[in-house]
Image (cartoon, rainbow, N blue to C red):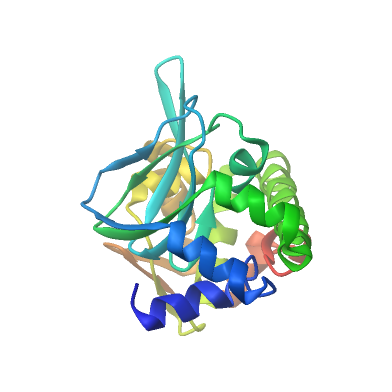
Length: 232
């Protein structure tokens, strides 16, 4: 691993309180691999074998049932995924594939669980990490159950706009089909939702979205920090 990568992994909340010898032992056991776009990393229902840390690229977590498929989350650097399955030594509940060329650190689940038993700092970080994941699921459920599809899109655009510096425009991190799946709608409904938001200053230019009247959009969307603020 490059020194900069090690520093970024060390700064992740999950690892920042680990004892140094345990952290180094975990890195020594890990595999660093580069995958091309659309490479399948894990498949739901298979036994968990690694904790994954995304160093470069983007990973799509998705699920399938009865010939239907939906995007569950997009993971970008520097973040981990599939922690709960690793800790329980359970099967994966989601599949994962690369969206673009990606570098991924793969830490064997046995090393993660061994550190859990011996490193109190790491154990505390795991508890906080899983609590954060639970709260994120609650927010996603509130977003799906309490808002219309158009409100979900409006609030997602406002969130992306803030994350990208509040400059009056934003770039979508993924294609519109994936955005529709993340928001729990079809691509056709997403297209209609964008058209509905035109009077509120939303202008679509490929993957760039112009927000020409943010006040009007926020008045319509009614952002709720207990749903939309990921730091709460």
